[in-house]
Length: 259
Image (cartoon, rainbow, N blue to C red):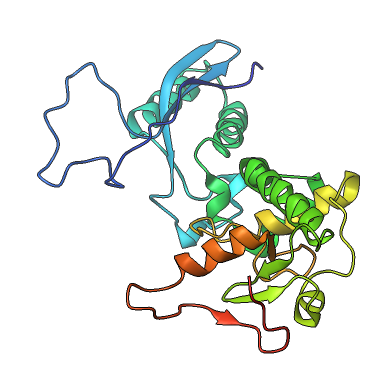
């Protein structure tokens, strides 16, 4: 039996989640399909073309099962009626229909972002078992960019002669300050191989996707302090000084940095 295929990309909406402007939709042309994703359901005796399937509108507790077993998916009723008609007239059978629908659900799992409705702990378990998931792939470039930044931060922290000052979240220190040494890792190497996969997994499944953070907040495995030249430190201070001279930063009282 041939597998189902997506016959059109899933529909995406702009500012309004339901795809409608607040004053209501324009009349829909009679030959225009919209909503969800169009999937061709292919059987040995023919194809049920462009069946519209969606996810996230209905979650029937009476028939709860795993998402990969169909929970949370919707299928347009006319297509279901055509499918039942095909079963009634012997063009297919119920077992094949069930198999094709589940294959279609599996096909749409990532395009419709069904993983966002999974239990986070279960999703992490499946990700570990499979060596990755769609969420990890989606956030890989974000993770790699943070690793690039961590590499650069670590290298600068190793050159206090060139970068004598270091800024934390709110305060400025000398790079050789004991506070800096306490707050950064004692050693750092960019993760590779299995260590990279584990680190990507941990990041992808814990980071706030709406965060504007530019470092590994909350993790002690990566250097988060920013080492700077004297000129950069003076600019850092200027950027955090108000128009009336108010200071929106702190100077470490232990090392008393003076750029």
